[in-house]
Image (cartoon, rainbow, N blue to C red; front, side, top):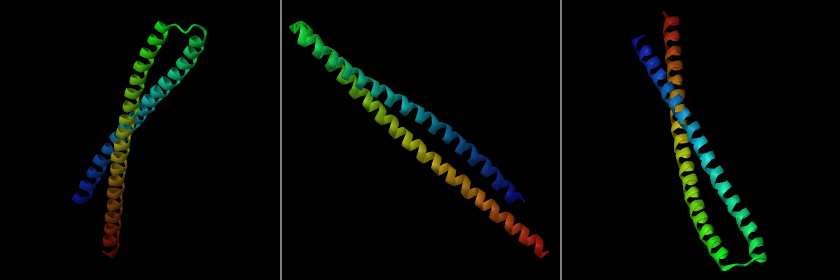
Length: 129
């Protein structure tokens, strides 16, 4: 029965690890979703900004306004590129967290199966007696 107690302790530990991995994966999902949403919002903002200013340029056409516009669009493009990298990194972290969770889930299932086999073996031994 000491071996069974050890297995149950191991199972409890593996379940705690699995639960922690699941919590980490869910946090990474939230982070990835937020980063992607922000990147999408920046893209939409740039599209709206470009449309609005293209109408303004057709009306007034001042050089100073064009230079300000180009400078802002350049900085906005850099912000979009940076946020896209953040979103990609968040997606990679999410993939790693999902892999860790799947691994811990498999470990819990394996230990559970081993406990089940040990219980069957103990019952068979008891019935032989």
